[in-house]
Length: 231
Image 1: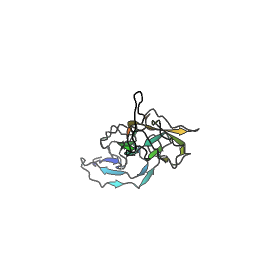
Image 2 (image 1 turned 90 degrees about the vertical axis):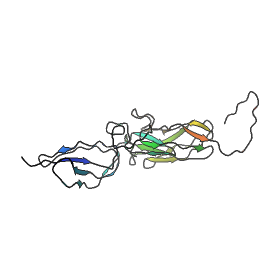
Image 3 (image 1 turned 90 degrees about the horizontal axis):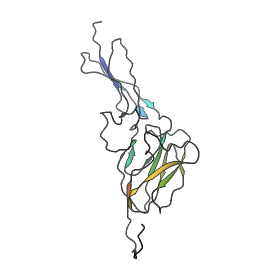
């Protein structure tokens, strides 16, 4: 066979963390590629001709198709300043640490990016809790757990448990102690699958330490010898 054989690449640009196959030379008129997509979303595959070969072929796109989330695996908590990144997972199938196409991200947490912003004592703020698969895709179509939010603030009023809706719950805690070391933890409340700790990411349901600053001044406080202020 003296006909030239093109080398072809199959990829998707809509999934930063997928595992894509190496280019292949087509010698029999047909070739199979195995792709592992990570992000639950609509996708389109693109097949292109390797520019280093002597054969020029027009690239082709697949039909648009949907990748659904996998089975529920863990809880994820997000606070203001953070956002979820589906696919950024500590799993062999995800290229979160190895894929050169992935943007540089100094955030040490999987499944999200960003830095928590300061909160103010006595002011509610939004906390998002997601039920996700092991790739941090939200799982909307299973029986939803009730979730309890715990804080490290000794003097705040703890929120009641709340059932997630379509894989997500929005809560609004009000912390009252000004400090730089607040941490929130989400946990399943009651019976059923717990989704609380996963060995590949044991901190997905725990926030980074964040700061709560004092509110506006409203009073004076007198401290006598032997007393200690307790904010």
